[in-house]
Image 1 (cartoon, rainbow over the protein chains, first blue to last red):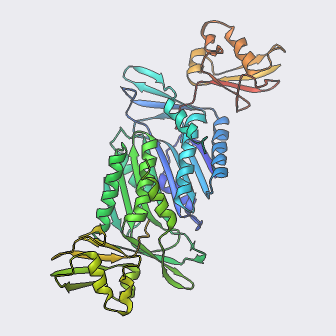
Image 2: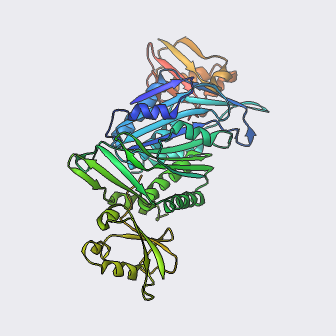
Image 3: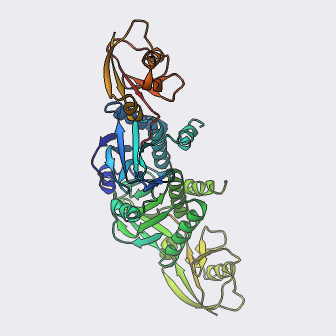
Length: 151
Length: 151
Length: 84
Length: 84
């Protein structure tokens, strides 16, 4: 289990290989990569800056991964989230979950993303042709996280 | 949309980059990698050989991806499945689905895997210390695919 | 009526062949009748008996017992799939 | 009672500061009371009014209005999160 908050980009293939290497119990690896879109809420986005809360952000991600581990029978999980200024098309976040079979890996990966979106202290500021703006929290994200409360 | 059946290994990071490059509408990429486990049904697995039906297998994968596309609002999808002899720890299959938001990408990725497991003509033969054996179809896979029939 | 038949995986091994060209009697015009026709060869061909868990495809599309088989078709028989 | 307060994202920009050290009156012993205490500074500080959609953490754990605040604590205020 590992959580990284970093400015640098990540290599999905390398991260997956690092998790699966030497663990022959793993048969299924579900991943998610979030990227910067070139438009949002009807305006072009020329760049985005991600702010976070050093210390609390890592603790929060650790806690989300631990919840996923308690809930599903998974073998390993990784979260990498970038901060700083990113261009459209760049990678923002990576979640990788490895398990014996795919059902648990998919569910835990989506669970981690849904809670990361609503609980982990990150904030996005977009640069558009009309100026900069902080991104508003999405109602759809709260709903996505809420789903997991109904077993 | 692309489907490849090949003997060679694949690089997840490179495949994801190839899909997302130049398409700034994409904000979410869900992926799945299946790997050869070192044990199955209580026996050690020293190697595995994947057989397929050239022509029909590719058509079947194309059709599964097209179904996912009709069902969810996704931007692109890729399936890579290997054939031939593989060692434990090696990658077998890759499914990548890119969309604007993560809900659709996750659902379509899991749907493609569930139908690939039950409909695409591939057969696994395992080598164990006690000899070779063809892998039996799993009831759990039929159930996973059946789920998608209830809307 | 000439068709081509393909066998895959455990079925291919059990029957000892991957493919054959076959001239069919006119009466053998569905997948179900073809299976019975082949199973009647005896010995290992009982693997194609109607009760056995064998899947069929005609011209690379999944097929049922009632699916028509005709001149020039490619028919395939194989066990339930196990890829992924 | 000395505490440290951190402000993030849009709230940090609006208040024009990222952090401050503050000596609190003894009566200000919860997150809710601290918000009211800060909002009473007027001008942009109304962003911390009880009705505003601001999240709080005490010692890097999410906190509600009733969460206790005491000597040496690190309290943070920020907008709903938008990462991922």
